[in-house]
Image 1 (cartoon, one colour):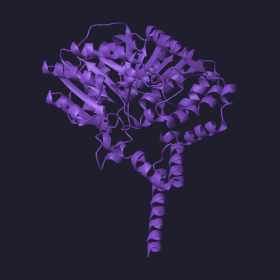
Image 2 (cartoon, rainbow, N blue to C red):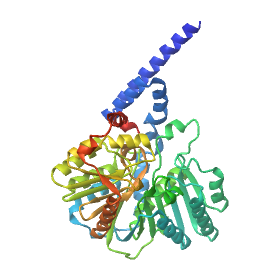
Image 3 (tube, rainbow, N blue to C red):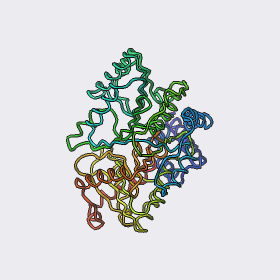
Length: 472
């Protein structure tokens, strides 16, 4: 009897696996990703099926938000600004600016001042000061909002402003903030603060939501001051690890460019609360705070377009002199990988900096598997060895800087909800390059000869993880 039941189970399981494989193939995904899922399902049948149920399903794209509603929400807040004047920008980026405007309804906004932070303590010091000086509203959205010392300090500052009559809204990602106790966020609500999780992780929807994370880090204060970059709200960003510091980059923006961040936040707010906010008071008329122009681009799995990756690809095509990239994870889609290689081959100074050690070991192994081929194309590779490099910054030539939440990997480009500031300024590009070069002093440049001397077993595991790179 037992043997018959076991046979029935095995037959049903084989049918299930075959059915899932057929579904994966029928979805017309990227062929590399399709092959990776088929391999996982065939060679790791039990674990592979569970992994697919949690991370592999695509139907969440249809559940998140319709294209029509997304377009309406993207345009409507920006319509409140009124007629947008033309701002000065480096003409070599005209094609990129048009691309982003057409793809994502993203206007070029000028009159900005931009300040970089490379020390997490400095960022939080300025952030709390700006919160304390808020007059009208504060909008905060973070992937990780921990209930530790710095999280409590930020929470208390927000509660104080709420009690003073300032509107405060908070969005946190359910997965990124999963270790934070519910009681921590209840303190917000008790003070009259509106706080909402993004894609709340609750059965039975957990399997369709876990793979789609809101990775954005956005702060908007009074529609005038904004923050964007790689730093979440957690003590580890200040304290680092036992084996090294946490090296990150964040930007403070003051000016019209903040209205782009505001638009992204209000789109997400509609999604989490079903409340449409388009009042002009959230998009105030502002004087000029500087001569810097920028576009704020958001991307996510609810749309077929890959706004940020398309923008980066265009920036690579347009580059004439140099491309500097800092990223904690380097698992580029094929199109971006080939574009970088082609840029180096045609003579550009292309540099990629990643950490020597990482907080996610399997992803790091996959990242290292790309080093050999980009070295072969003439790309310079630097391994940051002072600690964990979490900075997400790119500099193209002498006039374009990208900073935001995007890692240079498939997850950021395809699965996560991300935001990126495209900043058009020679001054800012010069500052960003100085940051990169300063980090080079704490990095080891990789040589092809030495790289190939590493143990074969290590190189094999890197190559093995490379096979699963599209799924990480």
